[in-house]
Amino acid sequence: MNNLQVDVAIIGAGTAGMSAYRAALAHTPNVLVIEGGPYGTTCARVGCMPSKLLIAAADAAHTAAHAGAFGVHAAPLRIDGRAVMQRVRDERDRFVGFVTETVEHWPQAHRLRGQARFVDEHTVLVGQPSSAQTQVQAERIVIATGSRPHVNPAWRSTAGECLIVNDDVFSWADLPESVAVLGAGVIALELAQALHRLGVRVCLYARSARLGPLTDPVLKAKTLEVFGRELRLHMNAGEVQLQRDAAGVRVLAGADVQHFALVLAASGRTPNLQGLGLEHTKLPLGADGVPRFDRRTGQIGASTVFIAGDVNDELALLHEAADEGRIAGDNAGRYPDVRVRPRRAPLAVVFSDPQLMIAGQSHAALQAAGTAFEVGEASFEDQGRSRVILKNQGAVRVYAERGSGRFLGAEMIGPAAEHIGHLLAWSVQRGDTVQQMLDSPFYHPVIEEGLRTALRHLQRALRMGPVPVERCLDCGPGA
Image 1 (cartoon, rainbow, N blue to C red):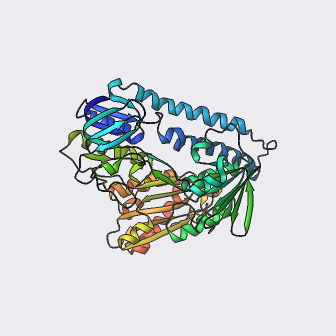
Image 2 (image 1 turned 120 degrees about the horizontal axis):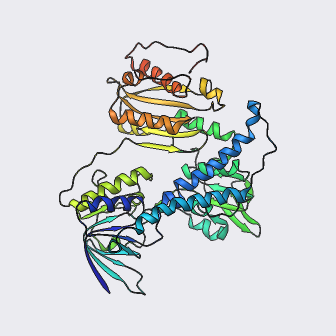
Image 3 (image 1 turned 30 degrees about the vertical axis):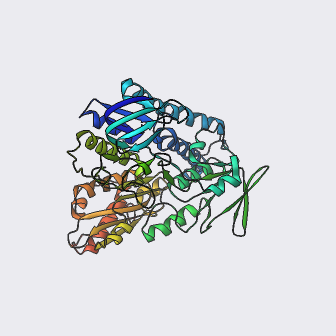
């Protein structure tokens, strides 16, 4: 057995692990990163980037199919599934290459391949029990092992090889004829719509009546209305049953029975903690087995072990994983001088069409905290620029603290939500008031004018105006 002694050991070389490595190096050169799988982050390999490549192809197909509304007529639409997936794979591999090249340029002494298992809070064994192992003694350890798709074991046993997860989609050589999507979260919604727009027969099955991450009751209903006009949705399906046959899988949801070539399990992700040997430590664990940690420091309890990224089962977003890795790696490197680091304002985006976003505090979070707040809203159905580009769907709801007028957050389904979400998250982080936001410039004609309409509505609800209601006579309401 080989033996290594290091100041900081980082388990996992994904987004959080890479960020932790750079931060820990600022304090000590004696850092080791342990990786049991292929190099390349979840984002680059099976997440953010390949999914956006597929969505980009779907958006191109949708734009071409609906160009007639502008008086623009092209030849009959033809989707080359093999060409679509070739570009997805090629560009995905390019993004992964950037990541793997970065890691492989680290000093060899800073890298160790193999599965890691805790012996105690300062010791991990790396490798398989049946082969040569390395024992790593570390003064501090960062857990950054990421997550994997959650799959109901019953689905796997009945659907067999016809059951896939989002990781599998981006290795396709061609588009399938049909896919049943089991789930109603971000991954399920994005992939269901993209595949539908690329000519795949799709039905999305949701256990409840909620589609997507929005929590505002008005926007939850709007989300179902908007996507229900395009996608086949089977809401409140409960636990669906799968039956494998020679041609694919039969999906049973109550009395409804449909047949599909493939079933995509998109019902969330699970932290990669299995086999990590946390039971051999004294680390405090929650009922779900996830270590209890301080999100401002990354520290697990009062131990010398830190955690970062998707494995902490908090916010499975790349920018959050990078921040958490930086915080955990910095504190592991400087231990025992553990420092509290401020976190960014929350921001989440769904790249569907129309897009969804939550910036700052969600409606549900404000209610749960007992915050006294007011709501402003605006529709994009008659908003000037949105109508010009035929993206006039959805609405935005904005929230501010009663009494102070401080802007707290927003939820939205509508055009350019990815960009508007950034503006609003920045306002939350700065502590802007609604009046300060209204005092900022709004160009014309832009989609952001719809946001201004919502902010004016919010200002009136706060009774901190009066704010004059302006209307562009050339563009109609909500311009």
